[in-house]
Length: 124
Image (tube, rainbow, N blue to C red; front, side, top):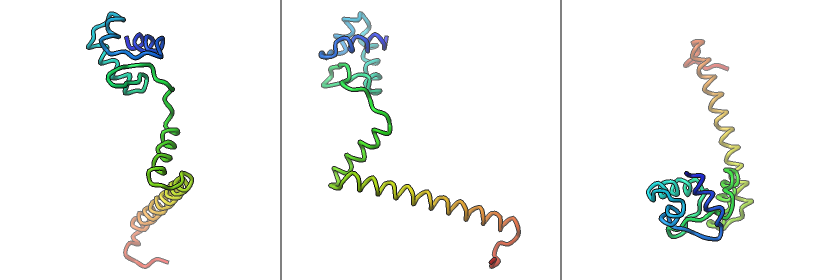
């Protein structure tokens, strides 16, 4: 049924329909059509405007594009360039990975010292 709704909307890309109109044309229960349309809208396969459903204008982008768009939108809202924000994000990621690596190494050394009975001693 979900495919029938998507197919129907893709055949009529310039028009928008309410759930009851789609149900009448496809001869399906209105409640079922509404439930399916909500699910399709959540996944971005159907566009919704003021209670009317239509085929989406573009294909949904992947997660890499979402993060780039979000970064650009954040930079615009703050009033800085997207390039400087990207450099800052990359620097923070690099620092975080260095700090996590350092914490991991010190944790391993502490465990080794504890297992050898060297805890509490000044070891050079």
